Image (tube, rainbow, N blue to C red):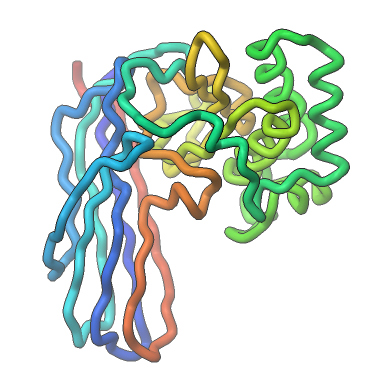
Length: 270
C-alpha cells in the first residue's frame, strides 16, 4: 500500500522563548514491510543539526531554533510503501539485545492486576507466540478504548484499574504483562491509516512489539485487536511512550507552552 503522511506539531508560547533544541524521531523505519519513497522533516525557522541511527535502528536528528520566537512548528510530509507481514519486523537492522526490553519503567511497572492478566495468558498456552496473542486479547478486553479517559502520564496499572484508555495505555499494559512472563517487549510509535473495519482512527498511533525467540520482533495492537499490517507506518521504538517519543526537546523561556497537533494519513496511488 502507498500511504501519504502530513503531520504538523506546533508549540506556542505566551511569552517569546530565547531558544529551542529538539531531538526528532520522525523518519519511518526501513525494513521488509516498509520502504520510504519520499520524506521531509522540517522545523520552521530552525537549523538542522546532526543525525544518526541509534542501536534500535531508529533515525534521530537534531534541530535548533534561536529566538525570540513565540512558536516552534515541526512539519512532516512524506510517502511510504508498506506491506503486510502479519506484524513481523523482518529486515530491520538493530544492535540492541532484546533482553534490554525486559527492564520496566514507571509507565510499564506491573501491579497485581497486570500480573494476574499475565498469569491468565500463561494458563491458556505455554507457546510464546500464542501467549503474546493471548496477552494482546486480554489487554483489549480489560481496557476499553476511550479517547480522553487518560493522560500522557497515565501508567499501565492506572489504565488497568480504570478499565479504559487509548492506544498508549493498551501498549503499556501489554508491555508490562509480557515482561512478567519473561518476554521482552517495547513500545512502537507511528501512524495508522484506518481501523480494521475501515472507520477513521487517530492517525498518530502506538502499539507494542514482543520478542519471540526464533521469529524476532512481532507487533501487537490491542487497541485494534490486530497485528500491524500495511495500514501502519512505523517510526521508532523505546521502553515506553516517553522513551519512544517522536519529538523530545527543551525551550528556554518563561512563557507557558500550549500544543497543537494535526495528523493526516491517506492512501496514495500505486
